[in-house]
Structure formats: structure tokens, C-alpha cells
Image (cartoon, rainbow, N blue to C red; front, side, top):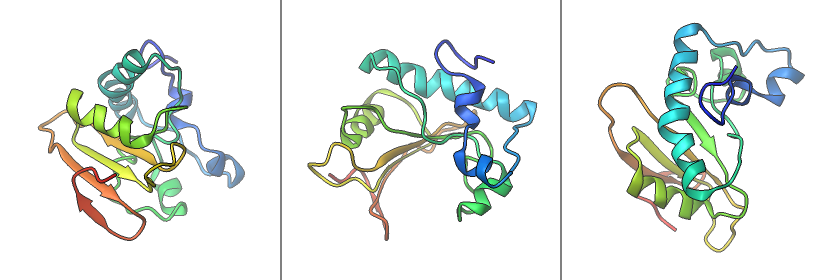
Length: 150
């Protein structure tokens, strides 16, 4: 099932961990609708700008899967409002910077980025259908800092 021109429901719900541990990661119709909005508002503009096919590293996670991964119950992944992204050959800092300047999102987090290492970290981006907080953060594995820090 396509959620947008280039992104499918399967891509937005895939989880090797869920498969290995027999965890159901099937979203409700309401969550599928949110994933479609997320794909259209965030993923499609990224693909268009960078011209690179990619698949999200993580998007929807059922509550059981999210807990098994050690993530909190307030995670926007549970509601189908968040996606983690890595683009081949593009630094996650450059990706986060482009998103911050060109897209409207609720929360943008540059996670585990190491300056000079194009393959380090990932970008967490959330989008809600109400007012966006436009929160920009960097997470180094220990603490969060306001803004994008290279």
C-alpha cells in the first residue's frame, strides 16, 4: 500500500526486531493516515530535494515494539508521527540543517552525529496535524542540547 508517491506502508512499519521477537507492528487506520501525512509532508520533499531514493530507518512502532526497544511511552513513533532518516552519502547534519530551513516539523533531532563522519547518527523528524512546535535539538547519547550542533 502506497502512503505517498515513493513511500509504502511496509517501509513505514518494517522492523527486523519485531520480526525476530514476534511483536505485532500493525498500525490502526488512524495511524496509517498519520503515516501518509508524514510521508507527504516530510519524506517526499527530502527525496525531491536530494534526488535520492531512501527508506526510513524507523517510523511507526507499536507500543509493545517501542517498549521492547527501550523507548518511552510518549514517543511520537507510537502515534505514527515520527520518522528516523539516513540518506546515503549525505551527512546527517546537512540533512537536519536542510530540513530545519525548508520544512515545517514538530520536532527535529540530530541524533548521535559525530562531526566529520558522514555515516554517523540519524535524523529524527516528527510532524503533527496540529500546531508544530518547531523544536530543534541535538542528542549526543547522554543529553539534549537546543539547536543543531555539529
